[in-house]
Structures are given as structure tokens and as C-alpha cells.
Length: 75
Image (cartoon, rainbow, N blue to C red; front, side, top):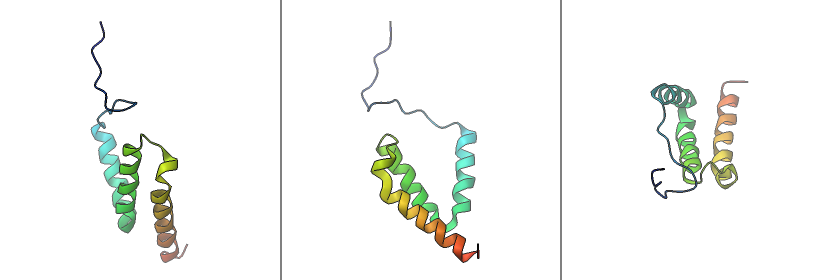
């Protein structure tokens, strides 16, 4: 007999594996001043059940920040 599932949304949230979390931390550090935008995007994706269309504001902000960083480095 199956256990009852809590109704928290269309999908169950699973905790990250520790190695995934460590890898994400390294990636965020590399983003420097864009890291807060990246984290906002991640939060939006979690809140919207990974619906990229509803997070376009965050996607565009992160993209613009990355472009500024690339231009600041001279390429």
C-alpha cells in the first residue's frame, strides 16, 4: 500500500546531494557580482516549478550582468 503524499505542488522536492550543493557554491562564487541575480533566478525556478517562462525577468537580468562582466574583462 502506497504512503500518502503531502500535497505541496505538482512535484516532490528532493534535497540536493552534497556534491551538487558544493558544485553550485563554486559556480556562484565564479559569478561574482552576478551571484545574487543567479540565486534570484534559482529561487524563481523553485517557486514556479522550473517554469523558465515565468522567470524571464531574472533570466534577462542575469544575462545582462554576464554580458557586462564579459565586456569588463575585454572579451
